Length: 70
Image (cartoon, rainbow, N blue to C red):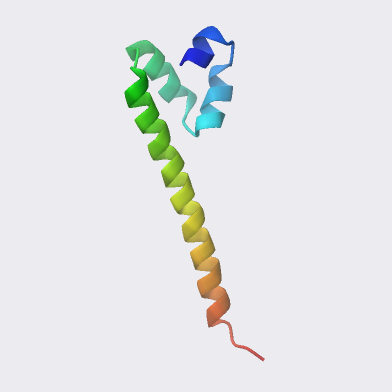
């Protein structure tokens, strides 16, 4: 929120950077979310994204291992 309020970063840039919607950020700004809660939400979103990437790799490796050889 500091970057939006003090450093001139746009809401859409922040939304893309932290993988949340602009609507979420506007809600935080309206509610004046404290940094601790915001950081937990951002970390949760980062971990969800990382987990989804791990699942994609696992699916690909599983598919490769089940392909007939030869």
